[in-house]
Length: 264
Image (cartoon, rainbow, N blue to C red; front, side, top):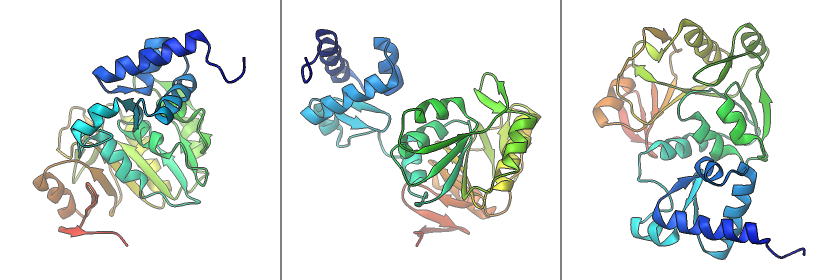
């Protein structure tokens, strides 16, 4: 009957509460656990949150007693979800936003999924899946599927990029260097990131660690004034600011080596 939970739904939701009392879990992990779709899990979490049985977090949920003990409804400050939330605050209404396929960008997509006043353009499959049932308008760049980073790349992707001028581009990074830019596993990915930065009016790189690790031999050079949304030590962030990156850390902007300024 309408308005009553089926036994399978009721049992799944009871089990959800039990799982979340033991540990935080992402929407994707919960969907895999129960063998259901992301939209089904999100409906379950919305119902449970409405009852006060759980507390929603960025991309997942937690038992409210655990959230209260921790003093937050999400992760500890400075982690990748905090980076995503900080990046999302840069997106204004009416913006066309280009999302790369790199680390941390799918977390930003979660932050933007309920924005009905923007358009997201992406070549990332994880970003696309995150936004598949979201309110936000989505444009998918064509291309050839590249593994293992689950991105659409190639000539068709580059042709599509040359036809747009997004207001903001957010790029993921496996490694960063203040002088050389984003470290990449192959020259094709490096060229694509450079093109994304070139076509956008403003570019921000997302990183949950602002160190200068460089596991790969290729680099994507970025234009002067590129932004960095990152967690990291003061020394790491200062190195990028000294190289004329615009730095946004956990709520504070470091610009030209001066910390503590906020954007107006």
